[in-house]
Image (cartoon, rainbow, N blue to C red; front, side):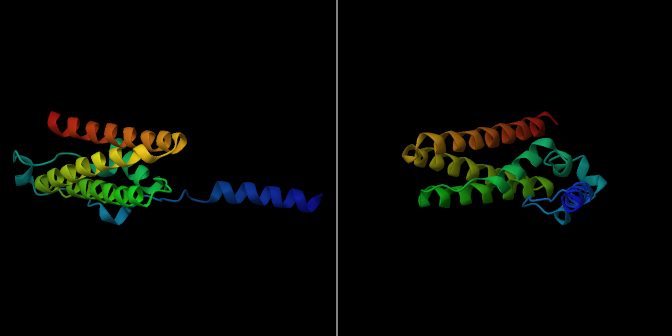
Length: 151
């Protein structure tokens, strides 16, 4: 009984004392604290968004990290392409690279369409899971784009 109590207390202490793991494909070292010079801020072709603190960018990053694998090899290959285009999209936004952002966005849309075609071969459960991920990705990308256009 004492041993069980000891392990229970030990489990509670270690679970409370440990830091939550960051499984994001975007490491914390990737972000820069400052964004461009003051002369760049007034330029019309800049992206004024802090990716590190943006909820939608964080959600995209988490979705990239947790995307499930499916039985269809062609679908998994296209999902990898989709995830890379999203990573490039976030990197381009953080680097204030407008042309890179636009290219990554086009790559994302192209890959998104291919995934939509490939999902026709999935069973109902896998299709629903994939649909949830795709809807959340598209919603968050749209929210970021609306934010950028609004500034």
